[in-house]
Image (cartoon, rainbow, N blue to C red):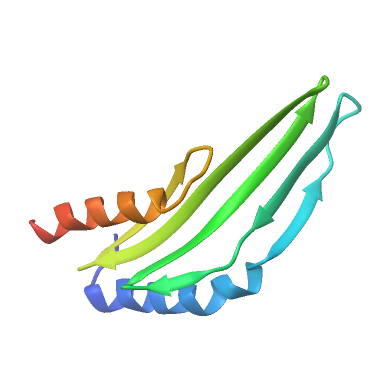
Length: 110
């Protein structure tokens, strides 16, 4: 929550300028001897209909087991509120955008 709608809007604008620097990147975070760490990948960034979004995928292998997780991160603002969510499912699609828009709809009614 920001003191004003203008500050929330400025936060969104700054985020929209900065997020593309992370788009289409991947890497590995090392861990202990029992784990190879985890790999991460950020997909392309979209800025459509007032919602900034990207997909983030993480893969972790530990004790011979691999866990994969994919999420869509979405950011939007309404009034003086920044709505920043992650929606995760095997194929995330627009789950993050859908959640952000549902929350934004509730803010609009306040």
